[in-house]
Amino acid sequence: MTATAASDNTARPLWRKVWEFPLVAMVVALVLLGLTLWAMQWVLYWAVPAGLDPNIDAVVRGLAGVGAVFAVYKLLIVRLGREKRDDLPLAGALGDTALGLGAGAAIFAVVVAVAAVLGVYRVFGWGTLEGWLPFFMAGGVVAGFVEEVIFRGILFRWIEEFAGSWAALVVSSALFGLAHWANPNATPFSSLAIAIEAGILLGGAYMLTRSLWLAIGIHAGWNLTQGLVFDVSVSGLEVDGVVEAGLKGSDLLTGGAFGLEASVIALVVATAAGVWLVLQAKKEGNVIAPMWRR
Image: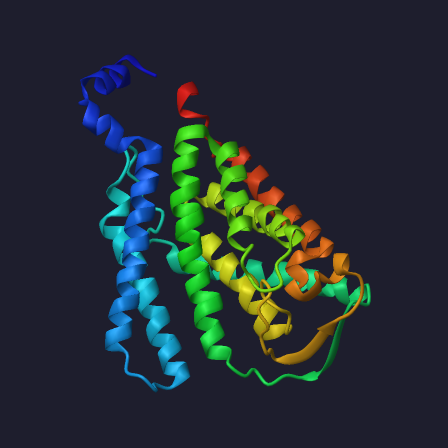
């Protein structure tokens, strides 16, 4: 710490030091986001008429949820903490998101290709794509955006500011896996697999770019590709895809009822991609030390 920084820190009143402390900022951000989502549910309950077409309902709810989270992030969350930062910059948003969508799709395509070569993934014919729009909104747009704001934009960001990049990567990944514990057909191994493969992959994308857009794209691209293209259960949720396919074999290779995300195949492929991103972030000097060492 420089003499100027030390002097500035000493001059700040105690209440401000507490308010701007990374873990306090993190909790406040989570509360703000939680209240926003809760309020949006009430607004939609009264504003959206009963009996609305399911596709229109899905689009309205999805866009309203994402819009509300985006607004509270831009208006309030970016102002929290001592180190002010906007991880949802408009500059480069489309390019990074598109790159992420392609990367997420490609990674899962490799997972499916390996599963097909090993004989555990088989295509039987064309699928129905029934309910594709609600899943596109909920499993792609909303899950990709909202979950990344929570786990990388809030948890990773302020844990990193307090305890450094490596602690943030470990803790945010563990919490991300734990959040999938309540999903249908979840097992201890499926949560562990999600924590490792997706936690490192998405955390690495955030570390490298210092923006949420690449991680949002990867998250959405991964979900949409496995469900709507390859007809694989997404985190335990069944989805009708372009093709009608099935998994047969050892749970270690198929992931069981949870889907290929809980397979050793995805664990190896996605984790390898995530480790590469983390190493690129380290090479770029984007690894932050704990606050007591800065």
